[in-house]
Length: 354
Image (cartoon, rainbow, N blue to C red; front, side, top):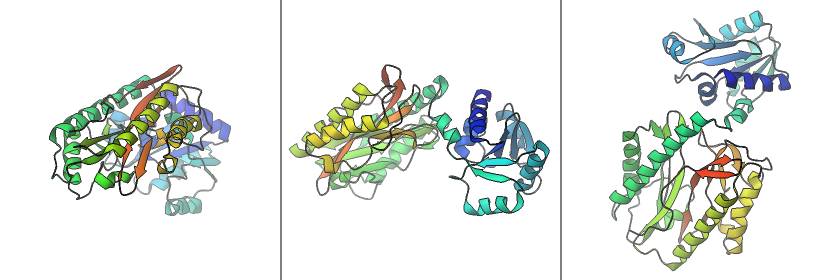
């Protein structure tokens, strides 16, 4: 954690910030390892404080290393004001993308210093995972892979999408997951044309193509996988679409490495799908970063001209969606390496027809 704080301080100096107030739960956990629900970090250029209340002081003493732990008796803002005065803080950076307007209004009224919007500093650090983080994400992916295998064994016509999602979610928890990365998507039949078709009361029928997009949280990190399979023959057009999506997804894997841009990877999948005649049916980005949150940088999208770095963990998830017919998406999680990538999700990708 100390190295992460030092990297943050280097960014603070560039932004001319005397202190940085960390309130985002994901960023707090990244910097402090604190897993409770009440606390903030106050980082100066040479000191670090963690402020919480009496409910979490013992937990903080066990989890938070390298910081002075302070227990606030009344309003936490009062404790922050004391720190700013004692440490001579003139410019306080804060996470404007996370802090509410009401919270900001309180700070603006009572703090006699410049409030500097500075979201994204920690998020930028989080984009590059170390070996320990990658190992945890890999375990989260392994749990998801076992979840997919479980679904293939238990799914049957007549089940509702919600039944499938619930059984999958509970199964992943039984393997050590603490939650799901997002609301599990089970989209069958014509509903598979909905890119984010969260599980519904629709019953699965013979001949349905089913898109299953899900993931789990393990030790604070997420996995994100999509597989599309069928119960019975879904028809030739959807089988052809499946092969187009699979080829597009594989082409991204073949070229993903440090030094390429997010926009380039997006174009690899998008151009292939467009040449196959389905460009208008691929409306979302090719992927995104994952880590402590399900959507992190770097984005694998048309607008991202930044290059990928070693340690980025990204999704590769092209798709084709035809209203009234159905859709296909295939997604893997990739670790970016200097000379390629490593696939963390290992579930089979050939079209499975049960």
